[in-house]
Image 1 (tube, rainbow, N blue to C red):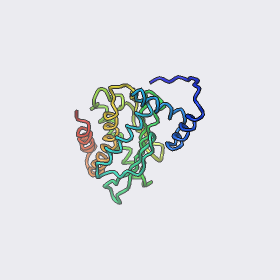
Image 2: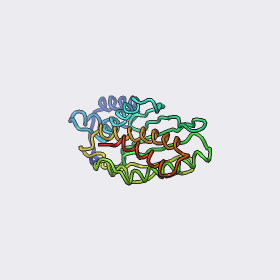
Image 3: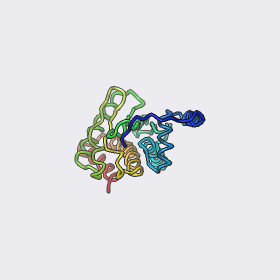
Image 4: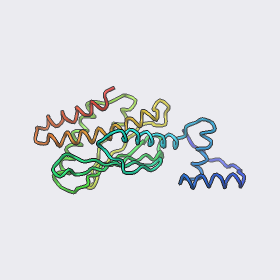
Length: 220
């Protein structure tokens, strides 16, 4: 949905109401007016779509026993964490950010190990390289294939990847996007545990264990 700048004369009484609502929602006056007009004309604004996607992702994650949701910021981010079955059960924190500022960039996912143990970090790097190979060989639904372009990048503290797709288009519904992103986070966590359960095996066996989880989550 494209945006434009217009000048509108609004009564002081209405502005007070709008500003009061904006403060309650902790958002800008412009976003609040967009929401009000969008609801009146039964249009889903980009901001409203992002908010609904985040709500749906929380539902997807809330129905599992592997990841614990830590926080959710309306229309912004959701954080969760889970244990990895490796030595001292290190924790992994996942932070998914959706800002809605770009028509093509949908989200950014950060995967943060809660330990600086060198061997564990090295295995995480191997895991993500295997996952990238699996994704390249087994693209999911064509409508979401663009989401799979790219790879995780490690900056010394966390693994990060961006998701790109024309998410404002009507055929990519709130439910479809939320199911994909929520399931992707769950898939990573389960695949990571499968990987660490097979680290004594050959690379081919570890690849197969990651690929089987990926296929289960994204079988159409």
